[in-house]
Length: 262
Length: 294
Image (cartoon, rainbow over all chains, first blue to last red; front, side, top):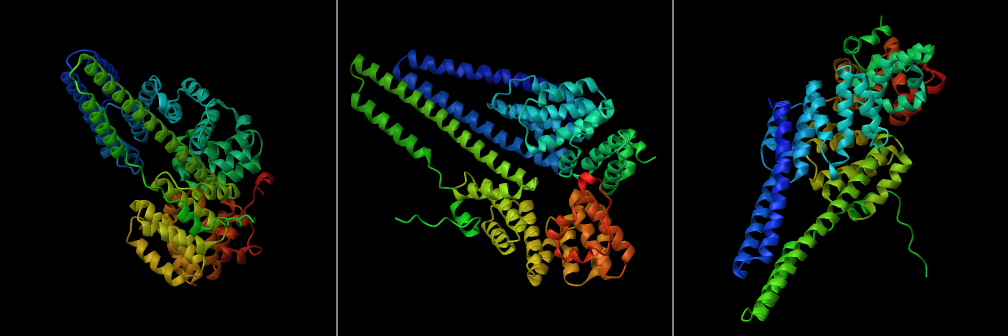
């Protein structure tokens, strides 16, 4: 298994090396244009162009390998995804985006493997980088970070990670994940009133989540409804959650939900 | 002069044609031609005098800069167009997911009216088009889109199987029972064998063809898979099971299944999806819901 620290250090080192290489090639191009006999200059330029092309082709190949990782993770093929990501992390790429995406994919993989601490470390390392055109990646990375920290019961860290997301435009999937994390967080800090604000809109959105996440989030809302005395709403949501997931599992994952199913 | 009549809204054959991606311009030929021009020009100038050599150097330097600039500009433009198309298709997907059908219909019609950037985006948008058409109960049109997508072979195995599943459901809605049965048998041999989606189609077929015992047996056997894979759409399975139990005269089970279905989805929505469930309304009570959800 690829160690998280190794992956982070390797990616950082490669990003520095790539930047240096680009600068060196740029200087070499200028040098070829200004210094030496004409034939040597042309050969030099062609040489640099060939090297650039070769590196670009190799990097594009790496990019294709990297693009397969999310599908492998989504289909539960963790070992293959691990191999894929390791290959991308360890191979040289001229493209900064490929290296950063490999860190992101590793964070997703560790999250899927429920290795929260490692997932959080990777997400933090990624957010510490200049993402440039990959800026949209920061939103899903922050969601990963918030969820991992919540699983580690780091409420302060979760609050900080969530805070940054409120200022960004989110896709529907990101919005749904954010809502699920918000409800989990709010239940832990007892923000029952907030949880029940615009309750029906929240419930309609939660219906779009996969069954286990939807059941858990609706259970949190059922708990909030119970806390504020809306027993009809609480019973309705509790019954829906029961139809969507195994109650024993819900309670074992979030013991506070035992209050709904004593 | 009379203006041409407006194109019919969500016309599958028009949209299938107009959305085909345009052939790509090959830049290699342009780059090659440019290189030859530069070589010819430098040969014409020659390198006999110091001034000629200097001029040749300037031309090469200029050509290199132009090439780099053109590559950068072209990449920037391509990526921008690609992202814009990607965002449009994602937006249509979100509207479909949010069941904002009128907006989804307008957006998908607009998107498919002009050539798509890639075959992948087009295929994805066509899948959304078929969902919108099915929602509007234009099942024949939806089947036409499904058939075209499968014939073109641009979908990966998983997506193709999902399209086959949607086509089988549309066939059932249009009472093409023989075709639907054949489609279901094909699906049983594909990647969706044993999936909740396939089980739901099979339950619907059994309800439609008057085999309620098979429908309830499958429902009971697959209950957990249906719950885990369908999410809130498990309401569909409960509604169909309720109808099957009712046909078998098992009223207690029919009542319970109908309550579960209406707990997870509004009854109007269930009736829209499965008109067969209409016979249960009034006979069995809906699930209790708070006033906000009623």
